[in-house]
Structure formats: C-alpha cells, structure tokens
Image (cartoon, rainbow, N blue to C red):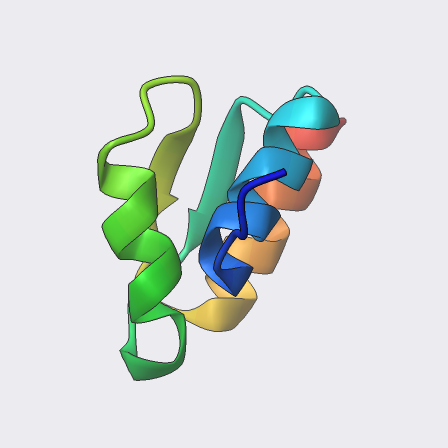
Length: 63
C-alpha cells in the first residue's frame, strides 16, 4: 500500500463516505487539502466567506 499524505487520506475518506460537496474557506492550515482537492473531480468545494456561514450552509444543504 502506498503512503498517503494527511490531505490525501482525508480526501480518500471523504470519497469513501460518498461526499460530493464540502463547504469552507481555504487557508494556511488547510492549504495541502485544497491543493489535492484541486485535482479531484468527484468533490465540489463551495467557497464561503465565514466559517459559521460554511457550517450553516452545509447544515442547510444536508437537510
């Protein structure tokens, strides 16, 4: 089994769970995830302007 970075492992886990959309704000702590997500066609990122807005948007979408 090839070694995965933390970002790759997270994206693989999201795909295994059937996640198609994620909500959030790119930033320094998550930049590796966003770099790998850029090449991933199965997960759509919804850009928000605030972390709380991302949580509310994800909650509303899930309902």
